[in-house]
Length: 183
Image (cartoon, rainbow, N blue to C red; front, top):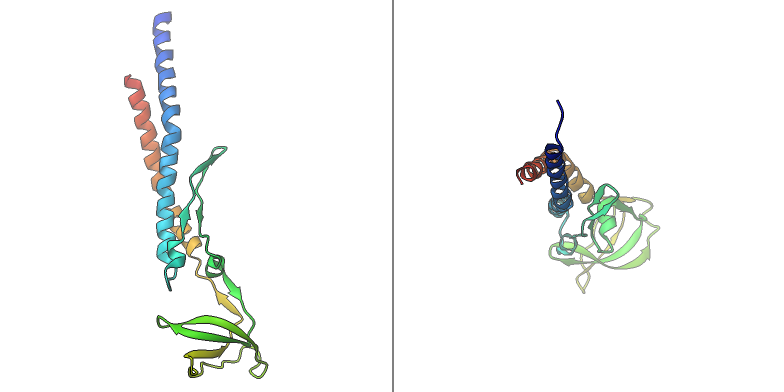
């Protein structure tokens, strides 16, 4: 059976129309899904961020989605200087004497006074009574303060949801193809 030029031309035109529609909508579709995933990522990270004053939690920002090769990059950032210390933890030297002040029910760092060699490394010294200014003088005893890993944990939660996003994205692509066939 021979295929006539007229039928093959219609098929080629239809296929070309489908590909044009798909290419126009696919980038927009991917950016939309990536933005949705980014918003959920920021939400999960914020829920896991410890709060004293709320500055760290409120500082999380989502960078615009960018495409690099075949990948769409989502970036969640926190510009606070101490964000990495809260995320990953930090080391301190035991025996540091610190002046602290009670604010909102928590001790707040005021200044470092020096080192105390009388207590040795890591020996608990407790907390003294406040002085006439309401300041507490404490001696550090832990060498490592563990992190909260709010970014890592938020990312793990969102990564578990990715198969569902992939299925929805595939459904949308199928809808685009079906819509292109009807034209």
